[in-house]
Image (cartoon, rainbow, N blue to C red; front, side):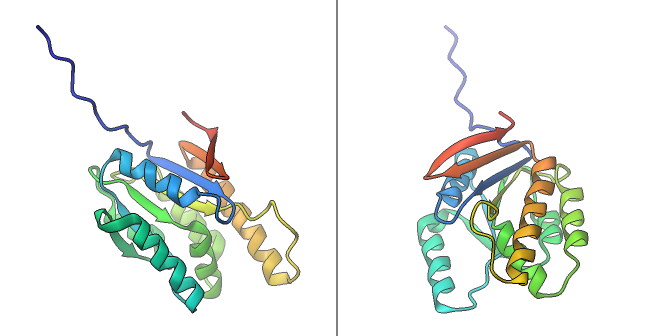
Length: 181
């Protein structure tokens, strides 16, 4: 009598991008993808610049629990991914939008930083899941800086989506597959 093979964990594609609006459920969905594939590394790009942001970070940490290892990387994302990626452990980057804000605030060249990141994707030792806000669906920002940020976020999302194997849009906690299987 032959035994059925043991179930295996679902494999993640090399690059997954999870998009959505604020409080859409995108982070929770992305965490579920990584958890289903094995224990993951959480690369956090946020910095607690005020009490409200500190509370958001604490809320995310509490929801994830102790199963995750967290690495904080607000600026040098491509270098961090290159150093941290291993085949046995998926990486979750939450989030690209905050990373972009950090890059802009630091006065770095956005196009150069985006190109360095996208050149690396698909060549990492293990899978990576990115979370990003879709900021282009709302009102036109009032200020020139707000409009520049919205435009750069749209360009960043397009660049990552172009090289991603899977792109998912999350609204009201429900995933909609835009690219891949």
